[in-house]
Image (cartoon, rainbow, N blue to C red; front, top):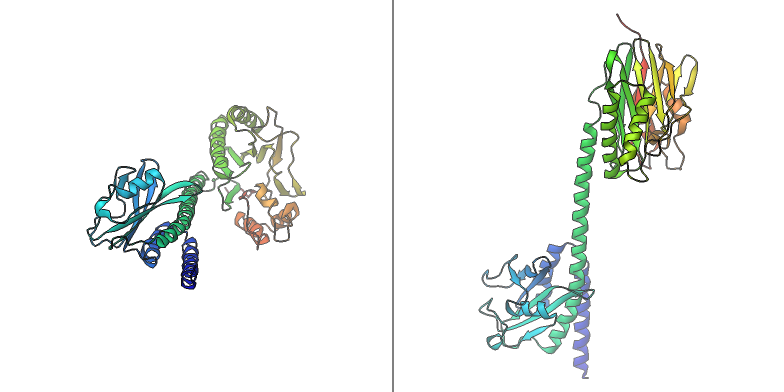
Length: 415
């Protein structure tokens, strides 16, 4: 091999490497295709160039990018049946490079540009799969030398990989965008299910707040008006996150409301809700719930607990957590739920909360825990203050779970 030939070969290889690196760095499909036909093809001496991608659903070639046509004979979006039209259709059907040094005598050629005298079509493949065709045309007869054809075939290998990577990136991005829209809609629906305003109960102040994490979760609280001025109060948490947890939360809310309206005791309500959910609850899913009925006339609250964190009570006797004897989470098995009655005089405060409160973690890996919660409650805060304290504790880490609280306070009865 002559020195000039070796030098030319090295220059071609370096040019191929630079071009391949440039196109491989672009993951935006449209701009990648435009870059190939506008810059890369021109670098390799193509008067006109185009990229056609295969639509597997219709078995067609679709023009994805074009450059150099004197008239808009072919534009983006034009479609051709594979094997039915021109050299590109032939290459797509055979999967092999085809060169027409003189298109005027070629049996497969279809006129797409009056100035074209020679045409080269190379299959674009990735991982052995045909994904499209690279089309290059020249105004001269035999416009592509054997060395040029080899160089463009080598380039086509890089183009095929770059195009498929960009397609995968585009699909993943669209899927993420779709999921983000669905999660946003699920979160919006979830927020609609929370009470619009606190209930007006003589002698009591009741407030609730849920601050969601970034994901759709399963926290939920509600107030259910009952006969004789009583009020059902619930705070629940579905295990897990995502749309599945949100859907189970919505179903649980519906079942609880239907059952609770009959005004039965909290333990019986949880038993009936549990039995209904057991018939359809997904495997490995469960719901923790505390449900109470507040009777403002007698200033008492009766509660039952299905595996939920024990409510915190502060009254004249001190600070204590309200435990119950029996009560597994819902959706595990048929089981009774014991009840507990709490006197609610003026000054008594009871806090329902989700495990997102006590299990909140700071940057050092420490849990917020029950002690922090007691200290916060002793300051006689609002629900906003409690959640704010939890979020400040998490500074530098961010929340990974919903934080939900409901505060029931005994107040002076005004005549």
